[in-house]
Structure formats: C-alpha cells, structure tokens
Image (cartoon, rainbow, N blue to C red; front, side, top):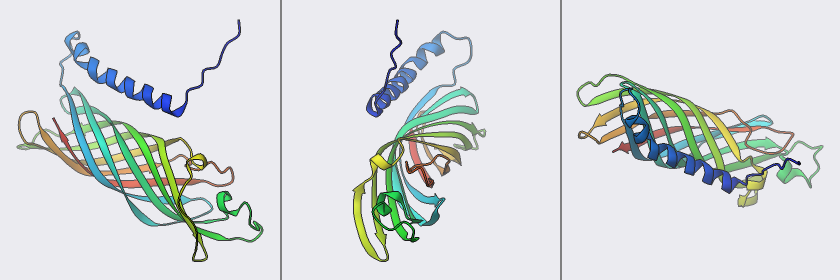
Length: 237
C-alpha cells in the first residue's frame, strides 16, 4: 500500500490553527470541572496597539524604525495564582526600512558586478499566535505587575514593498508575498501592569520586545530579519 503525503495550503493551516484555538477555549471549563486541581480561571480580552519595527539585513543595514499596528484577541489560562499561559491571536503589521546591496528582486536584470544600494521599505502583515508564560505579582490595591516571556509564531498574510535606488523610485507598494517566507518566529520579552476596574474586568498596559530570529525573505543569497517593540494596551473581561 502506498503512503500518500498530505499537503496543507497556508489558508488551510490557518483555519486549523483557529479551530484548535477555539476548541482549547471552549473546552477549558470542562477540564476544570473534572480535575481536582484548583481552577484559577480563564480570561479573554481585546487589544489594539502600535508597533515600532526595524530590520537587520545581512547584506546591508537597517534604516531606523517604522510605525505599524496590531489588534486582536488576548487569552490568559491561569494555571496558578500568579502564573498564566498567555496566548491569543492578532493581526500584526511589522514595517521596516533597509538599504541592501543588489537584492535579487530588483538587481536580477542589472549589472550585479557593480555594488548598487537599494533603499527598501518592507510592509509585512502577520497572523500572530504567541505562546508565552506570564508571571504576576500579588495585588497592590487594584494593581498587579507582570513579566512575560515566550515564543512568537507569525504567519504571513500580506507583504508589500517600496523600493528606490540613487534617489529614483523603482516600485511603490508592490506585492512581494511570493518573495517572503510564510512563517516567522520570534522571541517575546515584555512586562507591564494590570489594573482591576471591577471584579471581572481589568485594563492592561505594557511594553513588549519581539526579536525575530528567522529569515523573512526567500532569496538564497541574503538574510533579512525584522523586529519590533509594541506599546501594549488591552482589556480583559
């Protein structure tokens, strides 16, 4: 009997991830009812906040920070009084600028023996599913502080680029999704505070550093990594 290899398209993979997250959220109360371990609760919230992104190019350099935006759902699975598994699903834009020497996308028809600098702006949008551990202090009045550490799992849902060389524009807002990688991984390090508004509602604010450690482009002869800092704002219910 022959074994058949199953291939999942990006859209199918995203649907499976969303469905798995839904099952995890919907079945968590059932697990809590059938375990002797104390249930510290599950919280769901909303977030919307700016991001400040930049690039590190192996064959070039980054050119400052660029403003982006992130919005979506937050989820905390509290497995102990001061510890949570923090996740969620957000649409996150990571923008950044770089100057790179002879990138294949624009230099393939040029004289590559001459080193030519191209000023590029990446405008990348990801479906982000973080997996982090959140460590919280005891309450000080209605406020508690937290630290957060974990992994960022990002799936490319949009990629555009502006490019120029020698002060002359080459493309504006060009779709480069076929030239960028579908998956991006990053290291998350953050902290902030949560303020209780009432018994079941709290406002959260903090700062997150997301350090991308995978190559975001498909060119075999170059490596570009993107990073961002986020000013986090959210509300838990």
